[in-house]
Length: 190
Image (cartoon, rainbow, N blue to C red; front, side, top):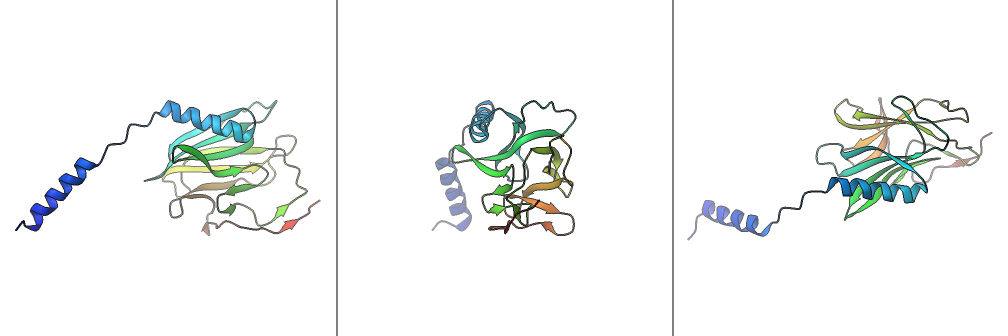
């Protein structure tokens, strides 16, 4: 009779022989695929802001901004028509966060309590931080809405990859990651 340690070693060798090492990711091709997908979603020119795994065991994501026409970016922040975080899944890029007039992830709206249907969207100011809100390696996207003069309308909100859910959510210093709102009430502002 074979002892347990010998059986365990034989089983490990069998499993190792059956497993295949995945081919190395072709980063240039993946970046190109991300940009093509983002350009199709935005419907125009895009700029890659970040690309990589933004946490331990995190999936491959890319952060892309839609270019605002006739705007020249200066400094670390980007003025954008739209911000996308695309996630590489099953050999294609899927939306993990979509911020334009409203910010959404696959579970619902993020960063809003209600939707003002009359809001005149002009664009976003985006700043990318290579740290999580807890100041660990990762990513935080600071997003604020801009007016027609390119000035911020209110404070920037932080959005980050929540390691517990695997989704990009708004982060609050006191409350932590805020849950998505599936069906926010619609209001009509001034």
